[in-house]
Length: 150
Image (cartoon, rainbow, N blue to C red):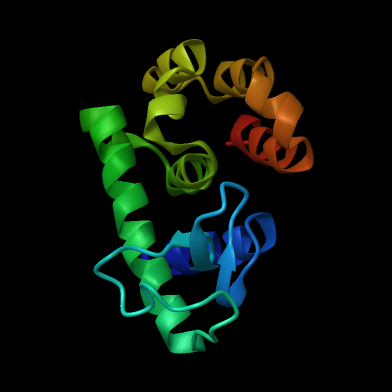
């Protein structure tokens, strides 16, 4: 994925996920910072209290690592097709994976079938026909509108 695409995803996710430059508890009560980065035992922030500031650089580094993981998860899910997807489709899917994770994205069976055949319009229709679309609302609709325009 190009550096420009990575930057576009970062800008999108800062809007969709938010970006917080301190440790906070997510909706599950887990310590988190940056663009939804769950604090891991291997992180220097592990064990620090809620409210501990996190630098812009550390937030960017954690995001880059999380983005690499999300791209890798998409590569695993879509196998050989991933590299054939237009960059716009890849950006949309990485955004979705950040939101729902690979286990849930795997369950978008009809959408994934359409993606694998390059039928972006049908994939968008199927993405809209999901609980995710109802729950996420504007973000989901924006992503599906982009997908059908590819």
